[in-house]
Image (cartoon, rainbow, N blue to C red; front, side, top):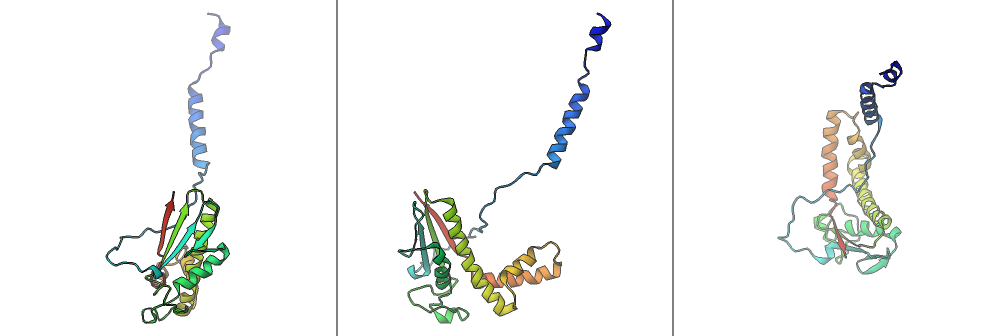
Length: 198
């Protein structure tokens, strides 16, 4: 073999090391994006022992054309939050809800503990409309919870939640906030039943 042929051979051992180091570098420096979803807490148990009165259910239907129907009437999405607030805060049985400020309509919900929002969507419902409806319902709960937090603690419920989730908040303050947040959530529990219609 001539001397020229020997010099053309390349030592590939160090290339594997370099490739491995580059792979580690890209794995460490690359951020992986995650899909965002709807934050919902599922119910812990189903209590089917007591029947649910029809007046305690706010029935919301979204069809395949993205039309919205609430309790059998077609409504605009922009009106949904106010309808949900009126339903949740009705206080049909005044003795059961002394903090409710609704109209005390006997045909609507008895109190926020019995009030259930039932959302039924179609497979053809667009994702944007579905999320908008979800946002309006959550906004209705936030309005009522903020009102009660202002009445009891002179601060907004959303501000308390934000402060509680802040990593710089002290442990003692977090314990105090947790009790307040749970009390407000008990006053207006989020009971949202979702289903999909084929």
